[in-house]
Image (cartoon, rainbow, N blue to C red; front, side, top):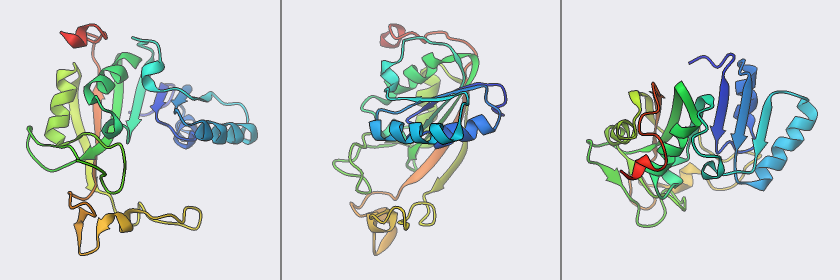
Amino acid sequence: SPLKNRTILDVGCGNGYHCWRMAGAGASFVLGIDPSILAVMQYQTLHHFIGPKEVYVTPHRLEELPGELNYFDTVFSMGILYHRRSPIDHIYELKECLKPGGELVLETLVVNGDINTILVPEGRYAQMRNVWFIPSCLMMENWLSRCGFLDVKCIESNHTSLDEQRSTDWMPFSSLPQFLDPKNSSRTIEGLPAPMRATFKIALLCHCFSSRKSRET
């Protein structure tokens, strides 16, 4: 939904680049959280030159925020879910940050398959450490529905392209071309399906069964 006059939470925001873009789109207040001190210091540098705006980045993890905030109009979780050991807890924590009628925008790695399909890499995935669960789009939609979200929509899915993720003069390190099988670009160097990402837009109509205690029942 349009961000004008909305309160925004960006989880895993890095140096806050997209937070500034959200403010530029008219958001009334943007909070970004990221545990990386380096990323937060980069934000502080940008903030010094850009000047006062309703954009803040703090060195916190999502689970460190107070429970059941019910404050934000829109919550973004982009490229975070597959790094979490408990994706269901992550979804509940995102939900607790939303006010009734709020919207979650969640982007994550996915694999092709049915509602029962999920990839759990034994080690690295495309040379990434700390990748735990990569569901199919249908399983992801089921997780979101089970956590109490309504009107779950997958609005986009596509394979990560070599133009999108590549080495540059500013970042000369190895990138996606080195992480794919040189003989078969549809597989990672570990022999797993190549990265595919999907974005979900989810509406929260109420907070039924949203508390941290209720997720255990």
